[in-house]
Length: 291
Image 1: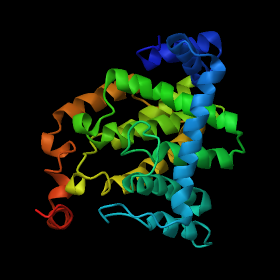
Image 2 (image 1 turned 90 degrees about the vertical axis):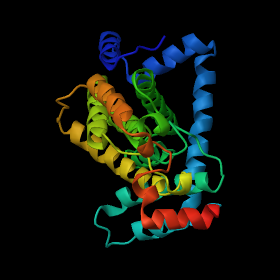
Image 3 (image 1 turned 180 degrees about the vertical axis):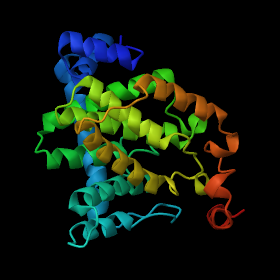
């Protein structure tokens, strides 16, 4: 059975000299009864779907059924090849991929809801783009997804991944934390460093509300996927430089859960507060829903 705490995960990985990804695979073999290769092939399928969703919007205008979002990923992708970008082609391509997944999701296309549909752009954007930069193989990208899964399991066991229960900090926050941990491990960091990255991401997104306009997973969700992607990638570099989190991962997860419970229901996916109830948010909702 997978451990309940990050501190236990680090202890096991250090004792057995293994990565988070390897431990996650081992636990999945135990619990599912499937062979190691079967589990890896299932994750390969997830990776391939993520790739398709992350790439489609880069060359196709993908409009949501509501018309709220669409066509921005292709703009960002074109911009990423420009010499005038402030953050460079690497970061803008990652941002474009995150947006592509969100647009595909809003257009009822196929995505991997990891950890949720509303945050589906973060992991693909982070892992695929970092993998390109680091010249990683497909199998190494699959391992990164297992690392992300291991971190996500601990968040799910001790807090929540639901925006309706914990706000967007539980969705985009968890996804970004999972992605940051995965990239740290891809870069050669150990389990302790990976969880430091996850902790820092959660600290920086603590309290983020869930306030979808018209109750749809489109605005501001798509652009929060971009923010989560940037946070994950920059935090990975921060940790690889030697910077650690003063607050342990387990504590940040507990804090996230408590903060989520303290958020009023209006700020937890009900579309009854935040951006959803601004004059523009209400106007858009009326145009879409007709009421």
